Amino acid sequence: MNNNKLTVSHAPFWHDGDSLFKMNLNIMIAALPAVIFGIIQFGIPALGVIALSLSSAMVWELIMNVISKKKISIGDLDSALIGLLFGMMLPATSPWWLVITGTFVAVVIGKIIFGGIGANPFNPALIGMSFLMLSWKAFFDFDAAYINYEFNFTALAPLAALKFQGPAAVTEFFPLNDLIMGQQVGAIGSTFGLGLILGGIFLILRGYIRWEIPVSFIAGIIITALCFNLANPDTYAGPVIHLFSGYTLMGAFFLATENSSSPSNRIPMFLYGFFAAVMIILMRNIGVYEDGTVLAILLLNVVNPLIDNIRPKALGKGVTNA
Image (cartoon, rainbow, N blue to C red; front, side, top):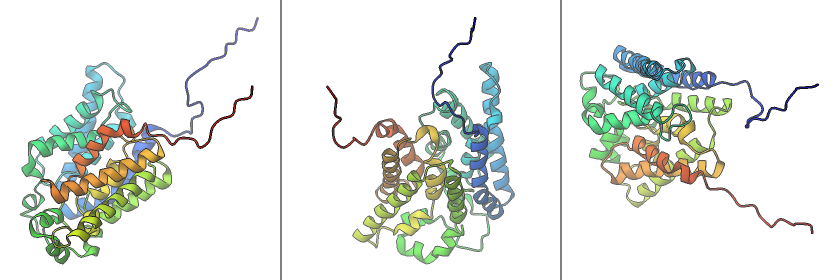
């Protein structure tokens, strides 16, 4: 008698051979140009912050695996990626306790408490960063953080200069080429705009992020900033300053595109990216925050489940044969 049984399982039924490890590794590789440039520009302290952030994030996940008696999961590099992205958003002068506190919030609260990989409704790195920014805002004053550094360019954070000195001063201090090539004060991994763009294109071509979110995000920055600039050019900067300053490009390619906290359907992706960018410009221009990228993306994470329910309706009506 044939005892073979038909086994039925949930989709997907075909595996493309990829893995979580490979995806996270490719995202980390894509971030390397910006990270390496930041280490060269800000020196050994920047390397220390990145190394501590990456390693402590993995240690927090390992500790939680042991406490909860679950399989050790640090080999998938998810916590390593969280630590890398988190470290990229920090100034090179961050004290060790700030880094460790932030990675604890990011990994344990932002990821594991919500159920782990794929269950987190918010980007874990942004959860950790928002906690630090709201608790110890002084450490994110980049002008004060790098006061003892010597640079071969204007040692000012562009968005802070924009907030307090106006767009004319920023245009004078920061030519477009300097902004693109990272000749500005800021977080370790967010200043080198060209490196972030190249990394983002690499991820799009490899299929690890969808193009819809970065494109709509950048379009939202350009359109919203341009509207403000046309209305009052003496008060509000044009799109270029906003696009190549702060966490903007990092947000477009590495933060807003996080799988679990972003939409999976095309129209919701366009809406998600565009309105995240709109919120960033609103926070910068009429809010109290110099940047706003972290909180704006987290806000869109909140409404993501609602946005992702938007589906295009089919045209016409079906015909039923009697």
